[in-house]
Length: 459
Image (cartoon, rainbow, N blue to C red):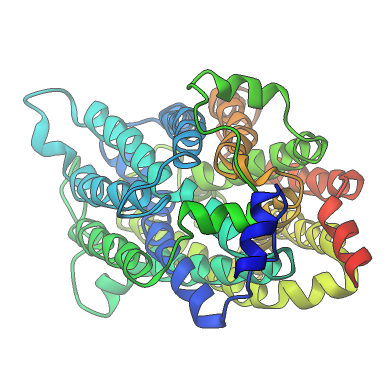
């Protein structure tokens, strides 16, 4: 260790020790809870807002709050987590406080009708969606930085893959949970107009407990490097006293790889946002044959529950495909693996137009799940090799801008396009998402990956 200390003192670094599978597993376990919450949000927020009176062409506008909040919150959290250290750790204080606030928001959103003395249910529900997403982002951003902090380059693909697998497991159960509560435990999915069904409410309550419980596993069983250890592995940071405004300088100086990945992220997340917002009504109208104005019938609720199952399928596929990503990357490279996965996602979304049997949509979700696994892992694997260690948190946060901007754009134009161009047929929003996913597959081929070059030299 004396030799290590002298290297660090001279401004050099020593290799980070490799972690065991269970160390990586515990470090990433909190993401299971985060994604359980996200899955409940993605699968049910539009349904809840429709219950409270939202029109389908306005859904994407209500969803604008989520990416807008993420764009603001994540760079700030990343900036301050880069220079935080106290008895709880470096990243841990942020995702623990985010978990507590997220759990409260999950309990409140389906009960927005309780606050009608303050404002209409729709306004309260949209506000809760915004608050919930802010809390999710507070909990989520430090996790990706934590993986990059603790793992050497040679383990980062495996680390992000395990994280993605846990994300998939959490999302499988979270997406299907309202259906499970109804079909397995007999909790009713019926409700009066303007009231959220009991199975959805209980799914959110239990989701809140899972969220905070999973975060606590990571907090209690994961070690963060203390400042002296961190300096040995990453070098002495020279940004400890930078002000909040340094975020804007960091944005202007972002690495070339990040800029190129930004285009890939734009296409990918434009597609995902359209899928999350419009799948419920696309399936209800295109597959089940309902009118776009039908939002309270038993068939509409059945379609909504089935969309939860479909989302569970794609998340389940992502959990399995994530485990294969390191092996596929050895054969095709990081960029080739991501391109192939995105190609599968684009094909899956496009196929939804041709499948009129609800059961066949499971095939579509297999393709989406392959893409989702790669989207959650490979861009961060590629990115982490190009970021200075002392800026890992802030650049992971800034990278989120390339996720939120396409969602904001889709949120602004998606609803009007469905109403005025697609004649209130949301299935065409899904088709458009498929084409955007194919564009992402092409654009990733041109990304510069310095981490892959470094590993090739070392091997």
